[in-house]
Length: 125
Image 1 (cartoon, one colour):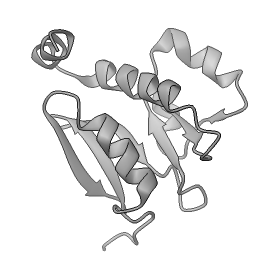
Image 2 (cartoon, one colour; image 1 turned 60 degrees about the vertical axis):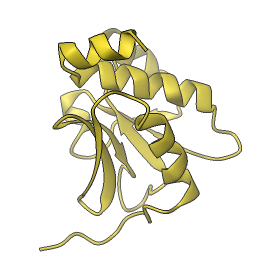
Image 3 (cartoon, helix red, strand yellow; image 1 turned 135 degrees about the vertical axis):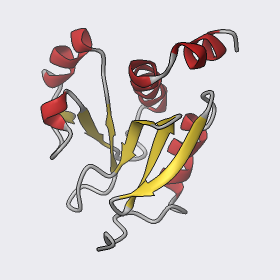
Image 4 (cartoon, helix red, strand yellow; image 1 turned 90 degrees about the vertical axis):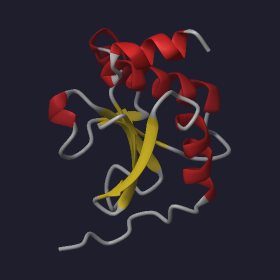
């Protein structure tokens, strides 16, 4: 059974997140569950659209020490399916979106799943 498209991969929001994600070493974009995902090799580090009800959001994997602090911030929430594994989501509300902060969240998420060679390549950029 094919999942319905949650967000158009050509949406400007997706394109902006894609631009951030594709700057990391060995990244692939794969459409899964009707939404773009970004992977460090085979491991997902960003999922677009936490749910059908929140298409303008991203799911990331924060560091364990940061997760509790983010949960104190009302912008962050535990997404369906991913939340129980420590992932968090944040809605994107342009023009309020702090793209620097979003880039940092994506960087941390990448570092949580990347292989050592990928981290070495990232840190040498």
